[in-house]
Image (cartoon, rainbow, N blue to C red):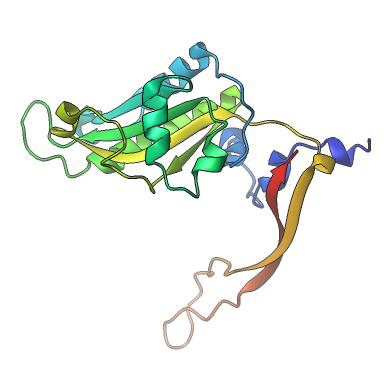
Length: 217
């Protein structure tokens, strides 16, 4: 096997970074192929602890995560609520989570209009910590809220944000993976240069050839 064939698939999924970005940010992505192996409970606890350190309006921390472990009835209930297009790849994940936000501030009772934003920030912190620990998360918006399996008493005061699958990503050699070649167009960031009319000039699109991962065997 050549050295090239042993490179991890994650290395191909990286965008072209600017210097100085943190390694966890570069390595975070949302794969659709997972190893059917459990995540150590200690690593899950660390990821939820990272979520708790996210910033929130008046430190309300309005997020909650309902955790469903593979093999439990609640996991099946949540899995069945997912869009049909997501179910095949989610089937190998060891954890399904529902991120939910508390609708009102706890102390003052007023509606918390920033709760979904803060819940997203907590989910991002969780995802970065997961990446550091060697597993990935992939959030989804397409699911049937009537079938999701969240307790009705919770939904009185909370709102579901997203469903998130979490699992360990297999590090397969490239020779066992299938790709298709695609071309994408990117518009580079405009330079802040004034023209005669005071408007920024048009920035031409640049074509970039990419390989899209279909799956590994």
